[in-house]
Image 1 (cartoon, rainbow, N blue to C red):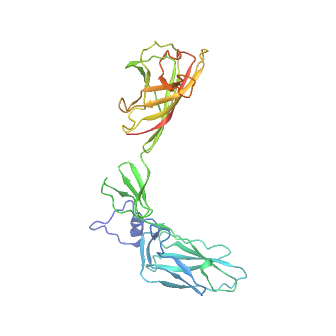
Image 2: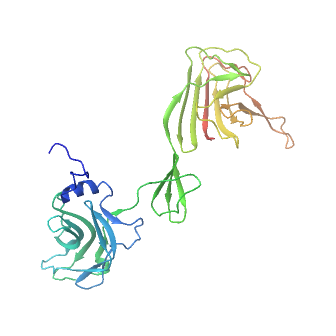
Image 3: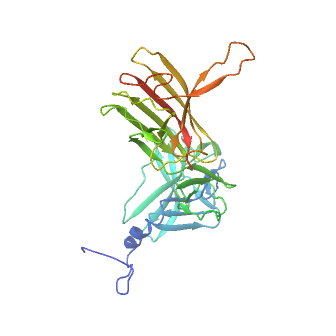
Length: 337
């Protein structure tokens, strides 16, 4: 058969394999539980010759399994001379038309799972170790091996989130949360990988020309609401002596928060014998949320304990004549609007 689709009138799901192939896309193999602490289908040993499987539900190769009472599964005697490693499995058997919890004896290592798409398909729920010459399994001899499968990702309307579901993901717009059973915990938002742009430098609204061959690059990336930014400028010209402080734009489309100032470090090194300096660059949201509007350096007003420190803005010609051979770097982070 080249093509198959169902269910339609005259084109039904008529075999278990057809059902399995369809239904396994609805949920992954595993026990229905959002928390590893859940006892759903958990296997226990108590020092007897059997183990117990707690009530619970599961998917196995697209088939649904529901156990509403505790099931007791006998342990075969280990007649070998060494400890035996066994499995308790959920077995979907299409020939037997059922899913059941079964004990599967191994050897010095756990037995392989049988997984035949149109036959028997097994998933583990526990590993048990049985001593030589024994059929006893204690609590210490049982290791939890359940695959867990829970809800899919929950879309949410802002302001109308459902109650927190443990270990469940919730998407609200471009923000991702995980539930802990009591609240939704923020994981992250839409990230922007490392990207470059060409910064625009201005003074009093006039664009500064640093030279046609200048190195002028901004590199940034965002994680959630946080943007990391580095700007590197190496002029190849000598711009005019503007009477206004130097400004530079933030990455396009990523304005800073309007609720507080953002701070960056800047460093200048002269290749023309004028020394070097370091200072702080600021985003003043009351002036602009798309530009670094002030690059300041500290200046002392005296050398006594009562002298008041001050800071002055950086110009194209004060305190340095910024030109070919110099290097100016701005680096820091800011919060998005």
